Image (cartoon, rainbow, N blue to C red):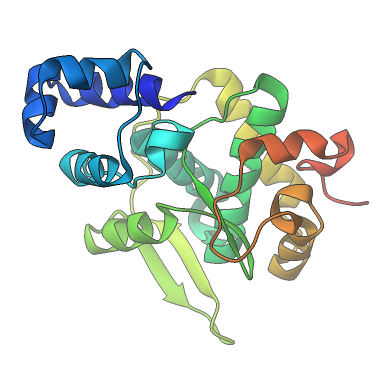
Length: 225
């Protein structure tokens, strides 16, 4: 996606007119219209203003709109599969990464569109930590600290909305979960460390989805035998 397409999608998603956005930037509607028609580009300062205006990270203008609601449903769906035993926090983060990047590998678009960053312990979805904190505060999930410091996450209710996930997407998530259900956290972290997306990026750098296309088909989400 180009910046102009993301500008259009974000504006329409929040229900604003071109004039309202132009007023926020203190420019004319004609000037703003050129941003959306790709005749000119907004400055970094203008993008920063719009990022605050829409309440999104500035990266979203370059990488596309993140569907946080769908990402949350992916998160909760994995927990629903894990049942009452739950799943370790780091492992959950990696399964979400597999679901998004596997979907991109097969469809050239991710499942949620969220941004992933390169961390020491592997790829991490940008909204993962904040979303986890919010759901814990709201009582949607429970987090228990295990011996050794690991955090185990479980659902507090199994009556959740998964309407944004198609049957095919649910099947993909279930397949990934079942493949990794009996594998430990260290193994899944090491697996992501050997993949092109993590290896090609620096700490805290956004990981382009396209890097997964360089990966061997058997090393996108399938555990090593």
